[in-house]
Length: 285
Image (cartoon, rainbow, N blue to C red):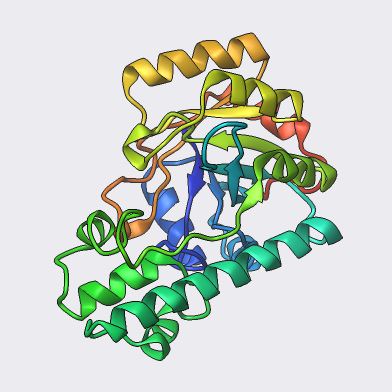
């Protein structure tokens, strides 16, 4: 059984709509795939409607969070939430706040770039987003369309890098609050790509232990941005903390060159995750 528990559609920053994403997952030989768009469940209905026969789909989301050390600046972290009730009032309100934050941030970045002569337009970017949650990847694709950069990765390495003068921070959720919200909605919180140093600063073992004490239920261990050494370390930490171990591709369509099923989850670990979720159930035959 091949299980990929972290993918993105065009509802957030992927390039395939939910139906196309699921068709691609089935064509790639996956038996189980999770839809985990950033800060939104807007793709769930289409995914459930267009689920190919024989493919189990796990409804989920990737929540934008921060870890706040006592003596250092905050660290950006991401929390995967699975099988939660999307109508839970407090969690729905926080997702709406985060979507508004993403939209405002992207608009400010585009306005700053346009003011300095870069050929990008906010109305054009929103049109191309097609109703998805607008974020930096949409700005990157606008820069590609305008011929400013050759590709999305070049945009993130330069104009959209966190050290760029055009970078705008956003007010993400405290990760312990995020964990509490996912759990309150009957969901399963899993710390995403926790040691992916290529993405920037990461938290230490003490922070992950504190997340576990706050209700974290899993660690995404097998991820394309983790080295073999980092995976081994996280696997040992998950065993010490009795956390579910997951693996996934973090697929974004053509925005990233990572194929579906690049990393996968062990079936026994998947069943542990499903057993812990009470807010929703996987969609399957």
